[in-house]
Image 1 (cartoon, rainbow, N blue to C red):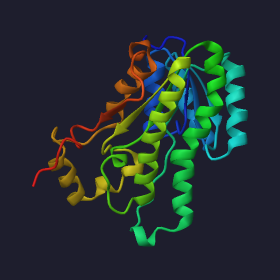
Image 2 (image 1 turned 30 degrees about the vertical axis):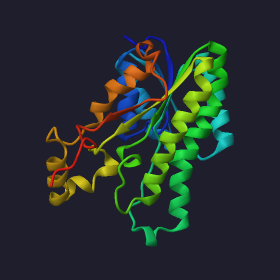
Image 3 (image 1 turned 60 degrees about the vertical axis):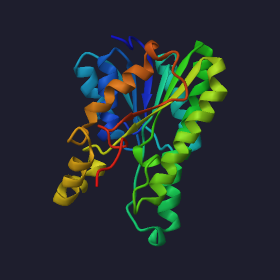
Image 4 (image 1 turned 135 degrees about the vertical axis):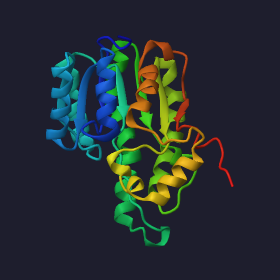
Length: 252
């Protein structure tokens, strides 16, 4: 129980990686505030955690709405008495050639993937300062390091999130708030469903990943547990890449 009684917020926790993060962190003793733009989804994940003997509450949260973020974070702080860990997981992606990417999809991607973590982090920091310690984990992507075609907004948002992680780490570490990132590689989630219905793409992923297999959501939980726990108290401004070797190189 490496996270016993650590009050942890996961954004976008109603499905995909967020759901797995919430369940996995709760299994290590974290008290979970599961947030999602879909209230029913967050409450369902919270119910799963509670049924398994954990402690969780589901909340509706739109990470693009600054006022809503402040209100929900204040409610979580009141409900649990403190906030120890924030996992900035909520994200979206549009697939479109650069010249056909419209400003609406570009802005929405930046708003959710980059501005959302910025706003959520600002909102939780007062509670962390009051408690004397905090951990913020930004869920970035290997697409923030290695460009992928037809994903200009997504790659830009995730590269920006890696930069934001470093700035936050530099400014906040002296106050005992440690900020790090996880960069998942290709992972079989609902958002990536098109990959796994395309035989050609599946072959590429298998061939170009040194482990010979793409990731599953559960593969990322260990990194999140480590970064949320006291074991990572000297880890600051780092990005843990969980990609089966995807970034290690490409064969040709």
